[in-house]
Length: 136
Image (cartoon, rainbow, N blue to C red; front, side):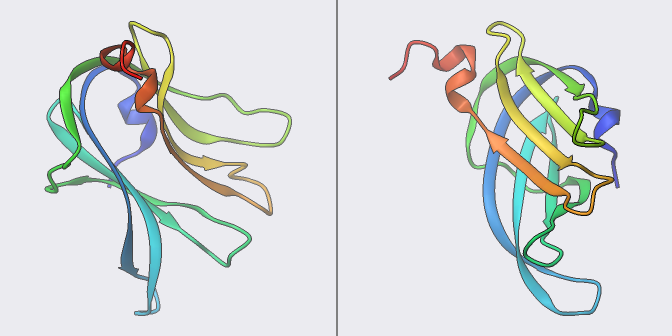
């Protein structure tokens, strides 16, 4: 298992997939979970949602994966940073920003991680990548 903060720094992003997968939970049941797979420096990471109870959710885990992202593109230079805590609580969220545009490409993790209502974060903004700046 990996920690989001271990990804802080500069990398090359070459693929992203967002999907829903049926995942076995800790009680041997199955539940549909959001998953974001992203490839940094040739290594694919999978961030999996824990839907908890319908009101609360969080990132279950982040792990290196042998999955190949199907949505691939030329390498984009990115800077990864953890967002700071705010007035609403603690955040365990990684922002992956395009170095050239300075814009957010991926946000992943758990907002309000120490609150009664934490929330899984999984967003992807391909329009913010420099390689897409001239595409409409």
